[in-house]
Image (tube, rainbow, N blue to C red; front, side, top):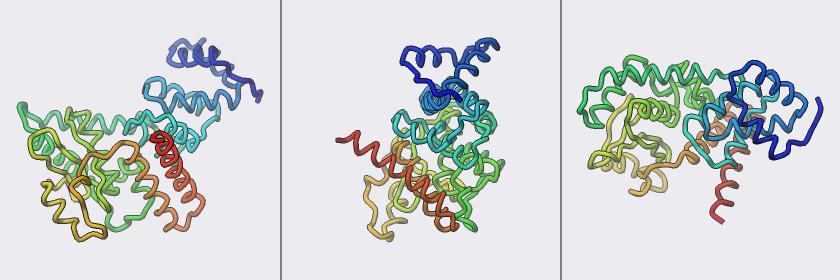
Length: 288
């Protein structure tokens, strides 16, 4: 495969053509990307990690067609790009374990759950009432539940696997809750506590929290603080504040590094530990 440098002007032109539906254009793009080799792979991975979902989807299609897939490199590019989106980031993270992951199938399941939630929500409804509808759909109709028997199974952290198996960790179940909630018109936030993860609602008066690992139990701020004050290091009210998407994804990588280590898979443990380091380096440089 020829390795040709990719000039800025050509890069921009190729990017602009990624979503062109013409078969002739797509054939010409494949031929050009094949000649460019890794230069094209780097460009496509960066687009795939960007915030434009339509272009990202087309970039991933070319990456797979041309055998340029490097999910770890794609996720590193996403981290460095600092344009974080919970859904895109979660799918890119899952792609590391499953390079042939079907993004559309995952999104279709999330769409279906959200559509069912909208059927159950009668307006006007409070956010708490809407969350009750989400709880019915996710935990009763679809059967999502916390994996207490095999907590350290790495599959508990990957979006596609959690959707397929209907079980996961507090953080991965919270991510699914948030992605469905967003589609159903709810403004909820991830809340990463020390040793646990919740979904937070800060829209209607006093905040409340949803424990997706415990089947959607509602908890007030005082309940959460009381439940976790016995943990090492204690808990501060500031710990109940929303968590950034970057930290949600970084925390997932930390979990995976630990769980692959527990599974006696040091090679994969190193991959995810390296991604934690990538997050830390990217955001320490941003603050400097």
